[in-house]
Image 1 (tube, rainbow, N blue to C red):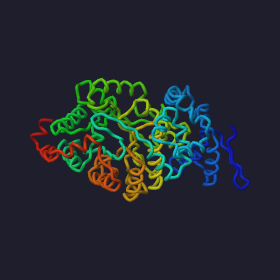
Image 2 (tube, rainbow, N blue to C red; image 1 turned 135 degrees about the vertical axis):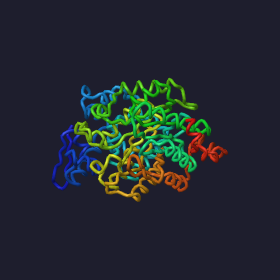
Image 3 (cartoon, rainbow, N blue to C red; image 1 turned 180 degrees about the vertical axis):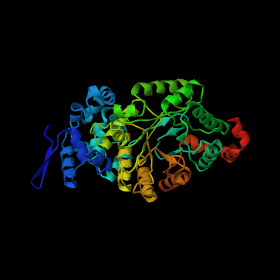
Image 4 (tube, rainbow, N blue to C red; image 1 turned 30 degrees about the vertical axis):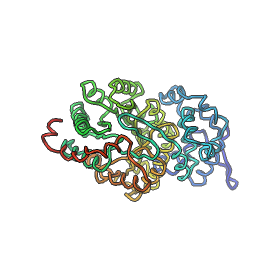
Length: 452
């Protein structure tokens, strides 16, 4: 297939689909670091014009990473649903964009289409879309999951309550949990990033959350974001594991750098499902991703970071997770330099994840050495709300004092719900209307903590 386009008498040629996708990407400091980005804005336009004319079927014929070298590639191709792909099999990438933005692309149509799409198709069409296109297409997709609460329904916005503490102090963590619950946060999950990644600490924190949940009849789910092997060991010792967490990436080598593979994820998924702790559903996995993770591990195979990110969603999709979120600005300015790059990346990730059938949330965040501030995050937060994001983070004061980065606060979620007319998950909303929340301040009392 000839991949080239002429502008003002200059012909721009591209070596492969991999090269074309990289050159068509929006400006990314990570792609520039990798030496694969477009050299000029004109070359970027030429790449996008070329990409628009590429048949979607070409991505089924030319794997970006060889099938024999990468288990993520094998997963993508081995699980592709040809019958679901059939309605769009004759389209080019540009024509597919037009379909997504048309009235014909209903919620039902997009849900049925998802198994027929591979990540490279989603990444390709994403590169042809403006911000408003990403929002318009994303808001059509609803991906609903259930454990003790229902996440992703129309007109709803959920939050992960993130009560991290720099010493895993149970009093500090409990105070943050109570603060968040009283401000309507925590219906997606109460999830702690532990300082100590060991079985004893993980089990202790899981029991802490579970004791609060049970004492006050809170409809939510818990998670301690230790390594998946630590969580499995805690589960085997009887810890009350609800959701199993793991960071994932879009290549086998990148996942290896995380200490995981598909077999380990499958083992964890089965172990958690067998506990049958969900009350209204059994979506038991929680995954986090982020543009630049494969490049940071030198495991990107020359694939641009936005396409690598989309490939991670194939891994997530395979396990029917409860929650997926892109930690969009967390990796740092080496990969997403400023607020503009972070904003677009967050909308790209949300769009691609939803298109592929995932319950996407976003950690609207940045590190303190990035060229970004809270105004940038307010913009992304609002645009994601308009896009129909399933959930965001709830961090006390938006400042995570353990991970030392800036995210979104309990009040930010209240702003978004109020401005866009959104509500928490139905089970959590019903709980907020009871008298149980008024009893929550007791949870911080030392005698109750001792019982945990």
